Length: 472
Ligand SMILES: Cc1cc2nc3c(=O)[nH]c(=O)nc-3n(C[C@H](O)[C@H](O)[C@H](O)COP(=O)(O)OP(=O)(O)OC[C@H]3O[C@@H](n4cnc5c(N)ncnc54)[C@H](O)[C@@H]3O)c2cc1C
Image 1 (cartoon, rainbow, N blue to C red):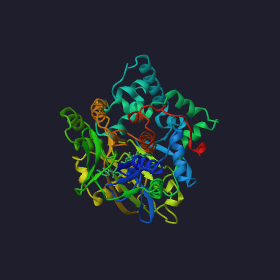
Image 2: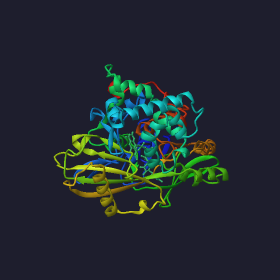
Image 3: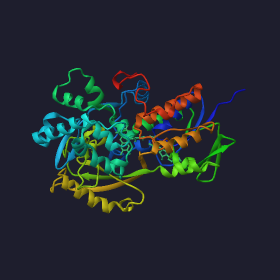
Image 4: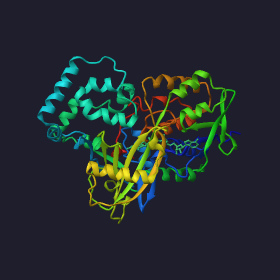
C-alpha cells in the first residue's frame, strides 16, 4: 500500500508556506520548521504601540495569473487596492515616482531637462554593447545625467558597493520593462485605457498587514493536516547516497522524510551538506548578503506626508527608504492619533552601524527626518523600535551568477532536495516570486513535472498574464 509522502519544508516565509499549503492540500504529510517566533519571514506583520506594521513597505503585485489566483484563494476579499503614491527625495526635492513631466521640469529646470535629454541622445548614438554592470546598463539606456540623478546614489546605498560592481542582472530584473520614452509619454499624455492604472498605480494590500496572508496560509496548512513548528531552527539537510533523507535541527534532533524543500540561506544550507566539493564551497564563499536595520519611529501626528513610501537618494542622510504606515490600510492604526514611520538602513555584518542599539537609532532617525523636512521641530518622536534583518538582500555583484551556477550544478546531483525563495535560491525576489517558486515546487512533487524553478524572477514571461482584479 502506498503511504503519504513525508515532506519537510525549511522556513515559514512566503515561499515555504506556499509550498507547504499546496502539498498539504495535495495529501502529503507536511511539516514546516521555522527558526523564528512567527510566520511570514520578511513579509511578516507585527503589533507595535497598538498598531500593525510590516517589515518596511510591502505592496503585493504580480501579473502572473497563477500567483494572483493563489492570493485571492488565501485572502479572499479581505484586501484593499491602494492608489500608489511614492516619491524620490533627492537634493531637497521630491520627484514623483513614476515620473511626472511637470514635476521633473520644475525640479531640474529647463536647463537640467535639456542636459538630460542631450546626455540620453548622445548615449543612444554610442550605446554600450552588451553591458555587464548596473552602471553601464542604466547609462546605456537613460544617459549618464539621469543615471546620476535617479539611480546611482540609491543603488550604492542599498548594495554597499559601487554601481560598477553591481551586476546588470539587477537592472534587467527590476527595470527591464521601463522605457524612458514610455515614461515621458505617460507623464505628458494622460492614460485613459485604465490598464496603466491597474498594473502600475494601484496595488493590493491585505487589510490587516501583509503578514495576514501568511497567518491565513498557516491556518490552511493546519486545516489540511500539516504542521508548522515555530522556534525550530534547522542546522542542516541530511544527504545519503545522493538523496536528501531529512534534516538535523539545531537542537540536535534528526528528522527523516521523503523530500526536503529549503528556503534557508542557500550558502549556509549548501555548506552544511556532507562532502561538498571544494569549488562549490568556494562559490558559496563568494556570494554575500546585505542586511537591513528597520527603525520604527512613532510620531505624534497623523498627516506627515501622503506617500506610502519615499526613496531617499540624498547622500547626506544614511537611510535609503522611509515608509509611512498611516497611508496603507486604516485597519493598521485604528483610532490611534500617531503615525509610525519606518526608516531603512542597509549595511553589512562588519559595519559599525549593525551593532548599534535603539537609543542610537532613535537619535539618528529623528535627526535625519528633521533634515529631510519630513517631520518638523514641533513634532514629537514618542517611541523607537528596531528590527535587524540579516541577509535580506542577496547581493548581485558582477559574476555572482557564475557562482550560483556552480552551486546549482551541485544541487542538481542531489535527489529530493529543492531550494526556493529569496535567500533560499539567492534571488532578489518579491513575495509573488517566492510564492510562485512555492507553488511550482509543490507541483513538481505532486505531479512529477519539471518546472525550471531557477528561472523564476529571471524570465518575466514565464506564465499566462493576469491581474488581481480578474482573479478568482
Ligand atoms: C524592506 C523590505 C521591503 C520589501 N518590500 C516588498 C514589497 O513591496 N513587495 C513584495 O512583494 N516584496 C517585498 N519584499 C520582499 C519580500 O519580503 C520577500 O520577497 C519575501 O518575504 C521572500 O519570501 P521567502 O519565503 O523567499 O523568504 P523569507 O521571507 O526570508 O523567509 C524565509 C524564512 O526562513 C526562515 N529560516 C531561515 N533560516 C532557517 C533555518 N535554518 N531553519 C528554519 N527556518 C529558517 C526565516 O526565519 C524566514 O521565516 C521586501 C523585503 C524587504 C526586506
